[in-house]
Length: 393
Image 1: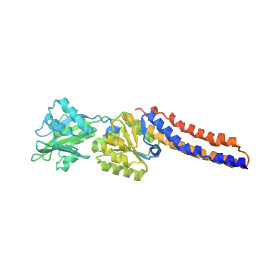
Image 2: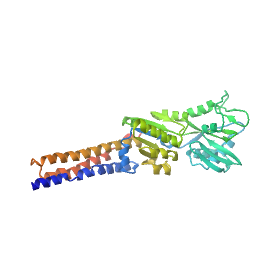
Image 3: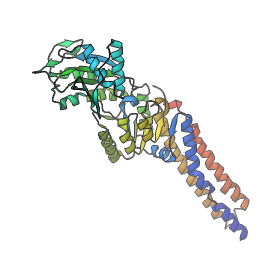
Image 4: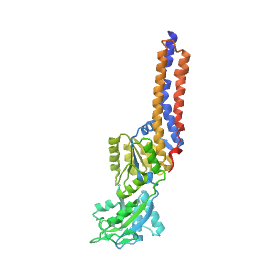
């Protein structure tokens, strides 16, 4: 009886059961780090494998974030140099990627010293404003100027270089042709309008290039079992539609302010379950914090996004996202296998002890050391999940 009791005591030692989860998590996090994916904790590794929907930001995530000015459309008596001069003056105080593109175009065009604005203010999700020469100037989305009272829907047939020429209205204000904005937006371009509260100086169109791996990443997420892939962006409807069609997301939501991105994530949580949010900017931080898993683009991401996110994709490679999901999903399966295997083997051995079928040596070799080595070896399988098969066009 003493020997059988000692055998049961050996079998009851929970070594294999206790290390089942930690060894799997360490293996998964280590494997991810080797492939340029930094995970801040085991709970985030497990959570990523359970997500039902993925929300992606557009600029800097699905696109490269390397913006360039493609069109400069002055209105009324404004010329291109004047338009760029005031736009560059306002954007010089901004940290948005659009500001970098406008400043680069101003330098290339040979615009002289741009004015330094006073009382500069960032209008979250809408644009910026600042006082220049005693007057308040704005640069931002068409919606910002519609709020200021401008009519941006009047049209006329004349065109200039394929882009309809803006029409003028009474007084000092001007109105952009609806076709002009629609044409630029349908081409996937972001439109920034510059002007005061009473007069429009013109519009600047900026384009961004879609990352080569974006479409393949979305396809792989669907193949791996993600139920819904959604693009969330503060950009206009036309640009969002053009990018969404290129990358193949299930749906897109445009013209979103930071708090509206949070609302969109919460709606996805209600409809589909657990959600992962991928973004790179300050505007994405609230949504990253709201989602079950926040994933930041490691190099292009702002400090705020990186601090808020639970996982970072180094090298700004969105193609690593399917790898991350597959690794996490597989890790959850390995954890369950280890737990049930360690418990099942110990149960079988325990049942064999009263029948005299299990010796102390067998309990040590199989039930204790054997299972500990077994769950460790099973966890090491995670290191064999390779990144290369998820990367590419």
